[in-house]
Length: 251
Image (cartoon, rainbow, N blue to C red):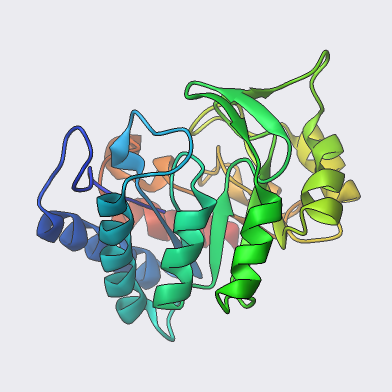
């Protein structure tokens, strides 16, 4: 996963040239280690906006994603995630640069997050995808997404969200996470989601050299960030040795 430095327009903006260089460096390291794809997201823009990001962030994300797509073409797939939940922006960037997928934290239903209550907009995202000629862009939707809790008493379990996200929200894959960035996914939860899901299931947090083999035995793929960064720090650059070790452990 490529975690971008703060983009132009964010509270701690960096020159776009620096952002692009960091993204390309991390992506190249991942591909050389044997990763099948790269997820690019504006992780450096915290605190995140709850819904739509600014125009300058969309433009900057598009510029970075275009550079990444040129680097990755024929080597690895590109997924776009615009935090906290701007599926419209992510889809626009993905269609413009030819990315293969987008990640949407809250695609259907609603979650209470540190940005407040976020409501899914599957109805809009699917219609935009069709109208923008992006039917080949897959939608990866979280269930029980990290850094949030569901509404209701008790809130829906992740496996119970699958129906709304897939059958009604028409997501192409679902993502299961722990409670926070880097947090381990409960194997029982993963197994229950996999049993309910008619589409591929991905693990989106807590993936490490020690856990990857067991997780891949229960899921179709994993998204990894923190454990392959220098010093295990989420905002650090990708560590080539850690990345290669994780691929080797995955078998």
